[in-house]
Image (cartoon, rainbow, N blue to C red; front, top):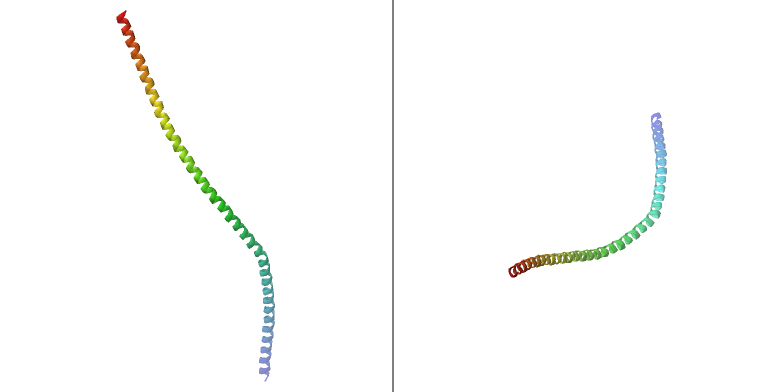
Length: 129
């Protein structure tokens, strides 16, 4: 009988220890849940304005990108015009070069004619004289 009382005492002590640890565990779980809930409430309160600001920034970026895209088209058109102007200037330069070459040849030809005429006149005047 003593042994049975001893066993009941051991079982009671074990249950008491388990109950104490169970209560402490439940208290810690409750504190953790409370802290987690407060953290979630804080995150929700801070995250909503942040998300709203991020959306506003994205909308602003969309407008900016749209403006930049239209300006890129304008710039592309302007660069094509600059290229056309450069080609036109190159053609004009070629034409001016050809005219300058022609004038140079005419000048050489007229100089040759003057020299030949001067020679012919001097020969004619020597024969007469």
